[in-house]
Image (cartoon, rainbow, N blue to C red; front, side, top):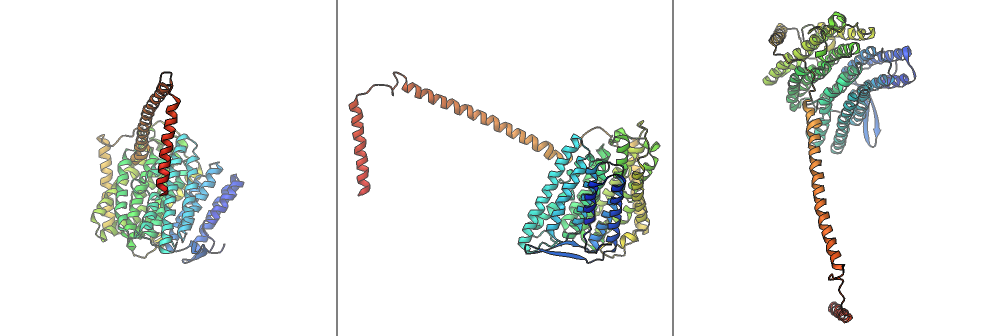
Amino acid sequence: MWPAEIPAFLPFFLVAFLAVITKGTLRATLMIATIVASGAHLWLVPDGVQLTVNFLGYELMPYRVDKLSLLFGYVFHIAALIGVIFSLHVRDTMQQVAALIYAGSALGAVFAGDLLTLFVFWELLALSSVFLVWARRTEKSYQAGLRYLIIQVLSGVILLAGLIYHADKTGSLAFEYIGLSGMNGWLIFLAFGIKACFPLLHNWATDAYPEATPTGAVFLSAFTTKVAVYSLARAYPGTELLVFIGATMTCFPIFFAVIENDLRRVLAYSMINQIGFMVCGIGIGTALAINGAVSHAFNDIIFKGLLFMSMGAVLHMTGRMNGSDLGGLYKSMPKTAALCMIGAASISAFPLFSGFVSKSMVMSAALEEGHTWVWLMLLFASAGVFHHAGIKIPYFAFFAHDSGIRTTEPPRNMLLAMSIAAALCLLIGIHPAWLYSLLPFDTGYNPYDATHVLAQTQLLFFSALAFVWLNLRGLYPPELHSVNLDAEWLYRRLVPQGLRAGFTWLWRTDATLRKASMKKLYSFFDYLVQLHYPGGKVSRLRPTGNMVMWVAVLLAVYMWLLLSFVE
């Protein structure tokens, strides 16, 4: 093994370079072996390892290891390994290289000990991940990728402005608690919020993720938003504003997800819903809440990845992703359907599945801190996520009606990757002590007390009953071919229409003013012409004596003025 001070992102960047000059089995072997070796090395790296350098009078820390960064480092290795296995059938060098750089950039960001290093990897995340959208090579993916890149680069520019303010105010670039005490804190908070999908700043995810390749969406679901969650946990724990932002994030995506037809876009909304639990826990700021937030991020990467993989497998085998076009696939893809249902049970927080052992920590912390209304919002969101992700995704993809599509199971590497993720969902749900041992704080939390199990089971039961009743009565929103713009309407419809109307008025006004000005100018020219035409005032003959008289008058005036100034 290499020295402990070697940053975790370096092996990923190295194997990305090697992926350019290799192909086939050799490339696949190198990618998997490197990720496994890097993960094994990170497991042996002790808490407290640091690497520091001096740069322009500032002490930078490109590599810092503590329990919080290690937790995200472990799960990012797991996500990268599963994602690479899932994409082994892909013969696209650009996509594989971009995925490795993307995963390495995420690792670089969570192990960054200073804001400048964080900024570098923050931008690398944006630049590398956009190729996973463009790799689909369609006009829609190209346009979505451009919008995605603009938003991600904007987040980086705001972060750069914030760290400059922060360095000027504090004289330090250390990436630690910042808070909302000044302009520096608010700018950095906004930069993190964009990547964390805060309300009204979230549509880059629901716009770009569904347009990515079947394998690219799996990587996208794992890294960008979770780096933002880590950054908020590092810099803004206990910030009360996050409690209300997070609670809002858990609720509003439910309504859009229920009416959405594209099942990968439903998962993107579901991701925002789950991030809301994490943001809310960070805002509460207690040891239990922080543990709940970061453990739920750990679990979400795995079960959301499983759901994106199952939908990616469906897209790969059928070429379709709208719920209205699918259904009955359990007959030809039973293994994929079963694995998808494990992911659905996990995200819905069924007992014995991974979501159950982490989401409950955030809700318990909210009650302990007296946030009763927030707890009720989280309870509503828990029921809602069961509707749109726990039921809607597997139901409309595999069971709703027989679409007549007959296909086969996806390639074995896809099934293997989904099986690994499903096994982890069950392992963590059945034996949560392993995950709890990795958390930043030791709270002695027990998720399997009778009250919690009974309450969650009742919630899920009545939520399922509501879905069945609405579906039987024809009240559940139907799957329709439509475009749900959400808050994107502001900049994809309102702003362009406003600019178009504004410029139309401007050009019309400009044309009117030009026409009036030219009319006046032509009238003036006509007047001058008339003056000089034969018979005009200027063209008349006058005696020479008149000119001599006026020259004498002007000379006299000039002399008088000159003498007046001299005196």
